[in-house]
Image (cartoon, rainbow, N blue to C red):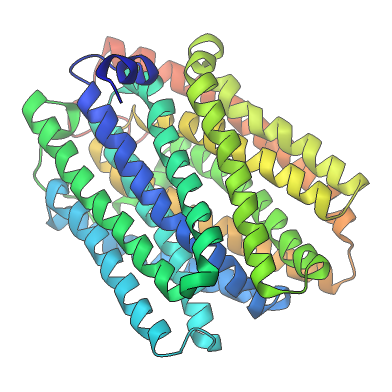
Amino acid sequence: MPRALAARLSGATAVELPAALWSFLCFFSLLAGYYVLRPIRDEMAIQVGQARLHELFTAVFVTMLAVAPLFGWLTRTYPRKKLLPWLYAFFVANLAGFWAIFEAGGAQHGLVSRSFFVWVSVFNLFAVSVFWSLMADLFDTGQARRLYGFIAAGGTAGALAGPSLTAVFVTLVGAKGMLLVSAGFLSLTIVAVARLRAWAERTGATGAADEAPIGGSIWAGLTDVVRSPYLLGICLFLFAYSLLSTFLYFQQAELVPAAIADSAERTRLLAMVDLAVNVLTLAMQVLAFGALIRRLGTTFMLCAMPVVSILGFAALALAPGLATLVAFGILRRAGEYAVSKPARETLFNVLPPEQKYKAKNVIDTVVHRFGDTSSSWIFAGLRSAGVSLAAMSWLAVPIAGGWLGVAGWLGRQQRERVAAADRHPFDSAGAVRAS
């Protein structure tokens, strides 16, 4: 990409441009690696069956609870510039292990299917959370508003490449071959992280100010969340999103096999839905996000998807079926990735380093999967009680209304914190812990 065009698309200054491009490539590689795996994971979930999905989500949540203090210990013990590449290398090693199991013919074993579902679900949230922690570490709020749309577009481009590769090649090389493709993308992510750290050290960016271990208790992320109304607000925002997303996911797990009997065709459909989501997302990120957040502000961007969810679940209640589900799912996921997610990530730029990593990771992983797990058991209980899919869609509408209220409050809180930081910048230890 020519330098002038890259600068125009990204909104980066000459100094920021290398970091913007490496961030774009890093997120591209990360999400390409994940989206190669996602259709395989979802097909394995269908094989397990909708009636047992709540058990899988519970296993994911329990795993997240175990990972949170471990990550707290790692950030306390190792410098970030060393920790992040090794974390991604660990994920590559995990994929190599699954490849060996699949190569030995274990892919159809129930325990392997469930383990793979849990691993991909944990890997997805954990790896993406760490990436955005790095972004919050490198860029301030003003830079985030200019650059996050472009950086998120890198992830969307990767999310386009991943399902496209799976849709084309899964019938030729099988699931095990796609694991190697995913591992290759994650290896490229490690290179990009190293280049971003080198840029931060060269330019004196925010994230290079202190490369010592973060320190603090391994439970600091959890205690910070409990003590801060602002962080609790972010928790509620993400909880509502994950709650509604899981409701939609469970409806997909029920409606898709009812409409399509063949496993390979279901995998292809899921890959094509991912493709459609990411085409729309990329267009919105490149053409609209930067202009919208500058003109309309973070509050508007945070409120957009709750409004879409209110309308979408009402439509699904009135016209339940695969076509409505797919249309609403594509629009909602594209809006989340292109609008809500980048806007939500700017909420962390006003926090001190320890909260950018520890508290953020707790929110992105434990809270997110708590929402998934809660909604999975709620969904299973309602279905066992004979509640229809249409009735559950109506139940989702007031939840989306509460989500909208939290979004508006967070937008106001962020504006106040940015203004306060401009007047009295906090030091590296942070001054917002008890706020």
